[in-house]
Amino acid sequence: MSEARGDLFAAFDGGLGDFRLDATFTMPLVGVTGLMGPSGSGKTSLLRCIAGLERLPGRLVVGDAVWQDEASFLPAHRRPIGYVFQEASLLAHLSVRANLLYGRRRARTPQTLGTEEVVELLGLAPLLHRSTARLSGGERQRVAIGRALLSQPRLLMMDEPLSGLDADSKAEILPYIERLTRSLSIPVLYVSHDPREIGRLTRRVAIMQDGRVVGTDDPAAALDEAERLVLAMDDGERTRLAVAAVTAGLGP
Amino acid sequence: MDGVIATTIALAGVTTLLLLAIATPLAWWLARSHAWWKEIVAAVTALPIVLPPTVLGFYLLIALGPASPLMSLLRPFGVRTLAFTFEGLVIGSVIYSLPFAVQPIRNAFEAVGDRPLEVAASLRASPLDAFFTVALPLARRGFLTAAVLVFAHTVGEFGVVLMIGGGVPGRTQVVSIRMWQLVESLQFGEAHKLAAGLVAFAFLAVLAMLLIERRAGRGPRP
Image (cartoon, rainbow over all chains, first blue to last red):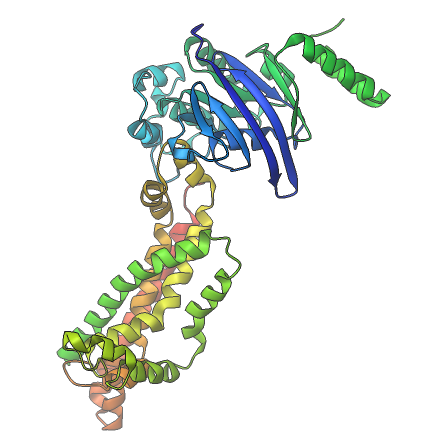
């Protein structure tokens, strides 16, 4: 868990349609790193660039491997990443079991995570023989997480995995995510716009706004940045921030 | 009569298999490409829907006849002409039915969308792997529709097969041509039998189409 394996360094600058991503982002390849920001701030775009699903000019180094620079671009299927999309996106023509094993059979990295371990960790045993069409939203997302884990990723990226779910499903699935981030040694990049959700998983959070990473995991810099943001707010925004802080259990 | 039916089934079967193989990469490209000129290609592949079959047959007859530059390329292989041959009929039928294969397969590929392919890529599947293990199975109903449409359309064609095939008994005489010859020679009894058979076939083909569509409507959610 505490074994340090270097950092992920990403810098992308380019347009995706009307949106412009101009982000520099660093995270250690250990534990959980949160990525927060209002919707439309570029969190998903940054993840897609790291996964190789979008290609913007830039540079991406993971540990000692260069995945993208001026001269090279490692295609998405060669990047040992586990990607959990906002919607579970199960492959509709495959059973739950075949969905789980799709990435495992293709993994080129050593098989460190066993199927039984993942099934146990996410409570998937009762779902294995069900059709994907008969799963609830929370169950579908658990299968998607298990599928990503079984592809033996060196980095697990989760893009607001709970945002499409109702409150009950969220409450059902968050403990599973907490458990897996604590028991596995895979670094996790977790995107959410919900501070309470991210607060349960990590203290290390980067903030995005308008296509830029504006806060970092350096607490002092984050504090300065927060101060700057608060000073730039009008009264209405400050009130909303205060309400959000109190709701999140961060009263003065 | 048996020879006519055998020729018809052979022609429709070979045409269907060839067209599935030809239309699949074309439909994939039309569904996935962002090239500005792809709709021009789509329009060219859809031309046979609008053109009178006799126009298409006329051009093909010239292209496959002994005087065509295309055939002079085949002369070293001992081929002088493909007009009035079964092979010529297959070529004509493939071009004539191309839109009936391309359109349903393209629609099916478009309905699959980006996400399942991104999921496959994030699970280490190469683009070719993802095509065969994700895109093809998810689009399978488009292939069924295309196969039924092409087979039925080939059985029903008349103008093109008459122009290129000429109705040579045992080689290029298919049921639609036979039907015309029977009526022309006033053999109404025989014509009735053949016509009833074709109505039954057409009904079964349309029924198969509807059942495939219905199953597609009830498909699992993405």
